[in-house]
Image (cartoon, rainbow, N blue to C red; front, side, top):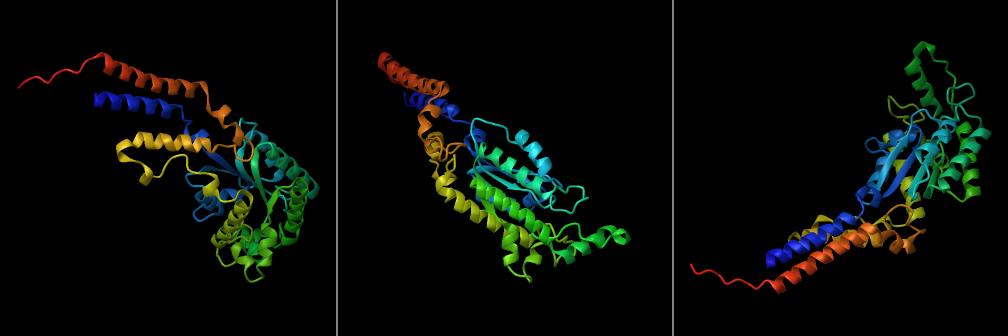
Length: 326
């Protein structure tokens, strides 16, 4: 009798577990969009890897950084990359401008007016695709390191002329501030923040002390610096992530070994009540009943209930048998 009761309970729990959404749809998503400054951010110790660690067990972080890209190309691919979906992404970061701000004639140069229009179009698109948006300004450019890198790369063919500068990058950073200010979107102003650190400090963030630094891309110190800026912005924008996004699965120490299936399922169902998935924060918290009570959920609950009823009926109908004498 006890064995059958245990089997019925397991069947009930398993039915409930099957109707809990899969991990991919259950978790929120964070998408980091941009050029090589985003792409390289996922290297060891990179700013994007710091963001991924920040959301461990709570959201999935996707790298959509494409080295060499500018806002013109980014504007074209963004609607394909982030189409309209049932739920919004929790957070999207947008970081273009470092290539746009190269001088006219360079491969990826985009005029300032077009850059501003591109950024506005991308941010407006993201307003319909993400709950939270962070737009990052291009960093300054350390001229001596940039020229040294040029000589190392091209040798006698090096022109000795800068194809980027801190001043030009500052204009593009200003365009981002203007666009985001008019749309009410938070800016992570890397350009201003780095320069505020002083002339002896900010060049280190761009590789001035490294033999292979290029004066534009982030050094390990620069990755950490930007990571701290972005995490601070995330905290200001979202609040405490641990409180906002409880893990959809319990920690191992919270699972009862004697009743582990029930421990996991109960945590999953509790997590769903807190609306972990995309598009639920600030927007559809009151729609849990409509979103959660689906036909599959009803079927699962009925199966579990039916197993319990059948077990009770069977124990009442079938009399217990006497133990055979040995």
